[in-house]
Length: 158
Image (cartoon, rainbow, N blue to C red; front, side, top):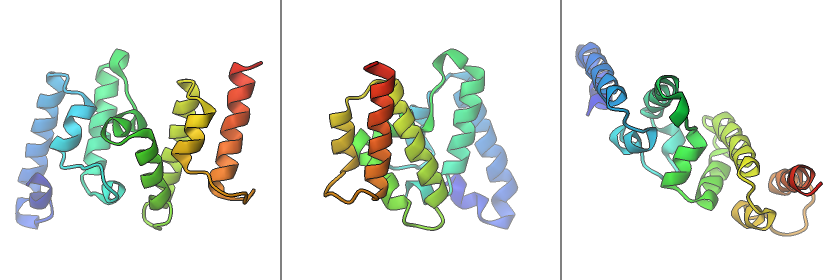
């Protein structure tokens, strides 16, 4: 409702103040970014990166992390609670094909791969989540998987 009101010039200023007050309330009660995901009207579907409320939620995430450094979280960690690892990767893969979401989707996929590496995810699982198929050695997924596999081996098997 606030997002719709922010689009109308006559109600934009009131809606912006209302949203700011609501965000302050959530911050004062330490409401997690995962909890506010749906409160911002976000859904775990293919339209997530194009949702105009995403920017407000990202600002909330940043403010939450600043206020709660011990409970710091990331977009990828939060999105993974609403998708699966595989579901998020595949949604981002589809979003890479849309010009308006390509950069953000690519950045988030890099962050997801870094998160998998940091949390020591098994390369077999990552291979499955990424949907790497066939023998095309130059596909984006195969190149990214090969890098993950090599980084994993260098970090954990040396």
